[in-house]
Each structure stands twice: as C-alpha cells, then as structure tokens.
Amino acid sequence: MIEIIKTEIENCLIINFTKHNDNRGYFTKIFESNFFAKHNLATNFQEIYYTSSNKGVVRGMHFQLPPADHEKLVHCASGHVLDVVVDLRKSSKSYGKCQAFQLSEKVPQAIYIPRGMAHGFLSQEDNSTLIYCVTSSHNASLDTGILWSSLAYKWPIENPTVSDRDMSFAPLAEFDSPF
Image (tube, rainbow, N blue to C red; front, side, top):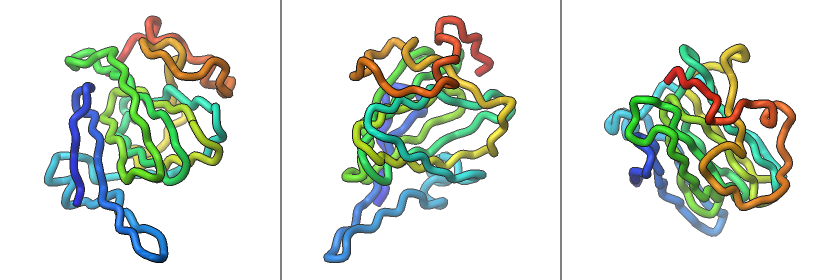
C-alpha cells in the first residue's frame, strides 16, 4: 500500500511505501505508475540515478532551469540523510520556504519534489545512498543550484564536506527565479 502525506511546501509530498519483511530480508516497491497517475504525480521518469555519500557531506541545493526542469522522486536506499527542499516558485504559497525530511533505509518512503524546487541533503551516515527518479534528462547548461548555507534553515552541522561547485552557487537572496 502506498500513502501520500502533504508537507508544508505546496505539492511537495512524502510518499510512504510498504516494506515486506521475511527471513531473507525485505522488499519495497518505490514506484507504481497506476497509483502515481491516479494521484496526478509524474510517471514519465527519464533518468534514474543514485549517489552515495559519506557522513558529513552536504550536496545541493540543486535543480535544472526551464525547459529542463523536472519532478523528482528521492528515496534513501541505504544509510540516513537529512533531505532539504526549498520552494523557488514565485507563484507558490510556499515560495522561499524550506523544509527538511529524515530519509532512511529503515523507513520505506520517498520525497516527491515538483518542478521549481531546489533539493539537497546532509548525509548522516557513511555510505548513505539516495536514488533519484527525474522527469527530464540531465542538461549541463541548465543544471545549477543555490548556495546551501543561504537558506532560512539551520543545518545541524558546522563544517560539512561540500564540493567546490556547490560552494560556488549564488545565495538564495541573489537568485532571480524563473519558476
């Protein structure tokens, strides 16, 4: 059974899945096209990829500009992350709002992130692996982000490991959103 829970950010959703346990381990289905279509969620994923991060790594805040923007379904397959989303859609009731979610391999759930949102996370365990399903193909010229530390959000880490690229992004206050 799949359950959808609304969040404080408009159209950003927590999707809870069923975890089937037995003596071999467990099984979890993270996507069912009929269920997603019935609830007006994207079913046309163009790319599926994953990233693995060590404890203390911050990745983000990433998104693609139009026309390569996309919906994202993000699931933690191993480890534990603090997943953060910020709404960049000027017409949204939750424009500029940030929300954080705990994602863990122990809890069968995902975050459904609509177009026009920046996404990032803090890995809270070594070898934390996130699976991403996205509705557009990667476009390097439209792939960008905002500075992770410029959000109205207090990250629970003082000195994370952050890539040079992620550190080079403009702060949220300087970002002129096309969404």
